[in-house]
Image (cartoon, rainbow, N blue to C red):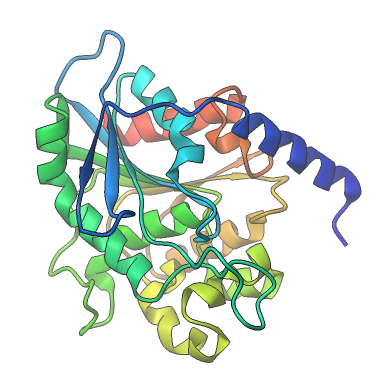
Length: 292
């Protein structure tokens, strides 16, 4: 049973992260015909002038429809005020209504969620060049929170997808690196722990498809990538516990790859994207170390 004090702390941290007003983008561009196939662009603020690194941001929310990119716009604005160009990617998520035998909105769509992330990343160099003249797409860092952290790791690993995958790239994507924030990075461990109500299995189409589709979706199975990767994780996270991140890092080590892991004491799930939290400054430093 989860400690009631931990639940109370998590609720307070979530309230703080979601208390910031949404930050409107400078421009929005579509990478497909569906209403969710869009990217919001934020130009760098302050003294920084181009070329500056581009941060591709993938939001969390357990891949479920009620959670869209709006909740992470304060974090996007925070990065832009620190002189970075930002692309906040939307993608198709699960149904907004409960399905039969489900307790709530189902997580993700197979294969549409993955179709969208792949299409967005493929389109971003051209979209960013038009929308953000100061952005240097050769210095792109992908970051994401929670379910978005999973998608960030997956986007950087498309060149090691199984042969025949429609999302496989012939070579590694041109990225400076990945910074995954409390990512759902090991599906087997996430399912064992019941992370987000079994969202990982729902993302893959349900338990009947879980084992079959994991090689195409689970970051811990897509290693090594050869791309610089850092994970930032709160030790007090009860949404995506640190064991999930540690399992991914261990899988990388077994594959011969070093993944940086920053564990933050006294930090839960949401301070990583809360501009008012000290943890957010740590995230900025991790991104900056790869980007600049």
